[in-house]
Length: 90
Image (cartoon, rainbow, N blue to C red; front, side, top):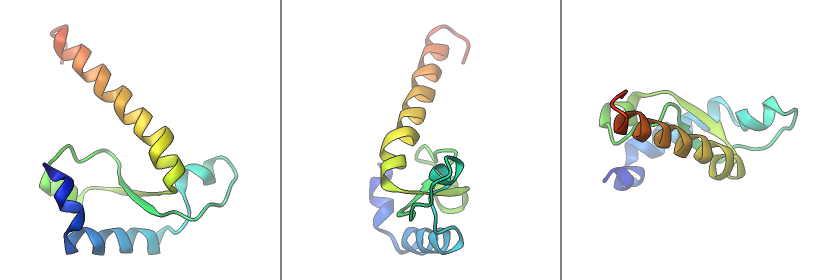
């Protein structure tokens, strides 16, 4: 659904601005490492919401952190949400 949004000019501009503002991976910095960021990640995730996609907060990540711990944390949050909804708590 929202995958195509990443090919739009609005995204290229936001990504460029984020990586210029914070060129280092924020996750690596917390671990004492300086790694060039290549990914502008929505945090919290936009969940196919156009408004959050275009104006929501971003963080700078290297590809390794984004594809590893960031996505693991997002999948875990989604799993917990599904369980809460299943159990009538969501």
